[in-house]
Amino acid sequence: MVPAPDTGPPPDDDPSTAATGSSGGRSNPFARHVSRIVDRFGDLGGFVAVPLLLALVEVEKVRRAIGPVGRGFSINLELLLPSPLVTLWRFAEPPEPSEPFAGSPRDESFGSPSFGESAPGSGSTTPTRSTGAGGTDVTIETPVETVEVPLEAIGTETMVWLGLALVAYGVISAILMAAYVGGIDRRLRDEPVAIGSCVVTYAPRFVLYNLVVFGAFLLVVPVFVLVPPLVVLAIPAIIVLGYLFYPVPFLFVVGETPFLEAFRRSVRLTTAGGPVLSFALWHVVVGAVSSLVLSLLVSAGGAGSLLALLGSAPLALVLTAATVSFFQEFLESDGLETTDGSRSDGRGTDETDEYGFVVD
Figure 1 (tube, rainbow, N blue to C red):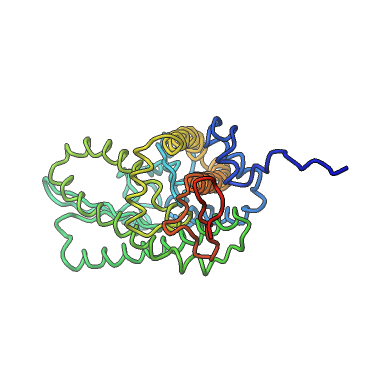
Figure 2: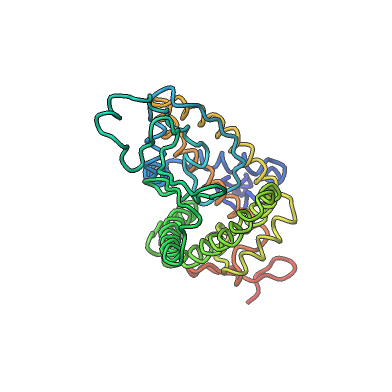
């Protein structure tokens, strides 16, 4: 007798079968892909170092988070859409440091505070400069220090240096995103991570993406400075734009999509609603709850901040990897994984006729 062929369901880890399966169509896409990433966390565990180290690089925020008890309290409820790089500081903002007592021995012995330290009773950790009546300070946050510069003091030379700093930051951030998201994508496909190949392939698109984001920000900031009430209108606009274009960085990697086409495809996917909208909404809900819990831990200082730091890194990895997994499934199920029908690694998609048979 010839044994009957195995007709059991395929493994859940196959994105294409998960997308077309009857259970996949009815289940919550966010929960399904988070579950998949949790099951495969052993394969992705090495990537947890990325959000952990990036959080530690923010020296000033780490210093504020582990500061003495009684420095204040900060509760965050962040509406976090899917993003390539997420760290603890996207979920929680450390509370402001406590104000030193006026006339303390330290102040009397050492005179004026050093750079970055606040004067007694100022309630600020950043150096400030009086700009006169009606003056406006521009706050510049760096990983090491937050600096406030009078708007009147910003000239051509300052703008050039700021521009160069933004370009450098954009390039470094692009390299990290290309290696991080690209590595996760390839690991989920059971391929070699090949960090160098990911950087060469995806980093140029991420550089352009960062420059577009920075450029848009620099264009609207002067408008908000001149007309402050417009900030209220900007909040819903930022939320809408964030949703419309949240797939773009993932399309660069998962779909091998060119730069401009990624923006067009992102708008088509997000305006169509369906799983793309559902995934984003559940991501926002989970991000809001997580930010509430993590901000409470950070506000506790000391051990609470350490616990938040250690807990946020795997959480950030799971959220990013779940988004990569979701778009792997979604693009493959719709036949949109790449714009030319093949990935850059040489694996093509066979053309089929209307009945599903391969055409030569």
